[in-house]
Image (tube, rainbow, N blue to C red; front, side, top):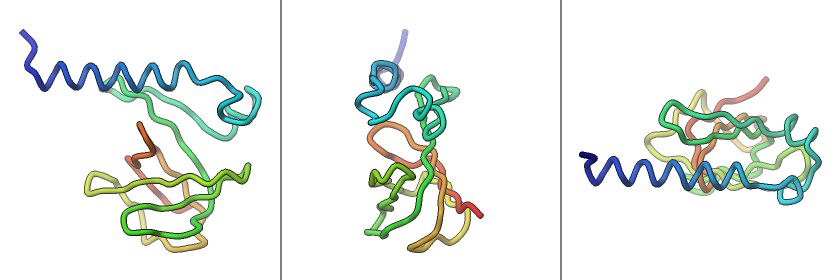
Length: 112
């Protein structure tokens, strides 16, 4: 029998999956070819979907990084103790972030 924690994890994974699978190109503000170039999606081992964003750090507000993507869209990326930070990041750095759910960063790294 599944524990309460396992049921919650499964429901969370299904919710995230449905959010990313059902997102039309119009919501992203680009056609299909631009979506594939700007954001890559992948399924993690626990079934949740992640996406990768690239952009420049506009500002850092507590645990949030505000990133301006190539298309001009600003994205607030939240970090916490589970986020893997690769290097010391500062305003103006070009970064790549792997995020899940409502913009929670799993990994952030500086790009050359």
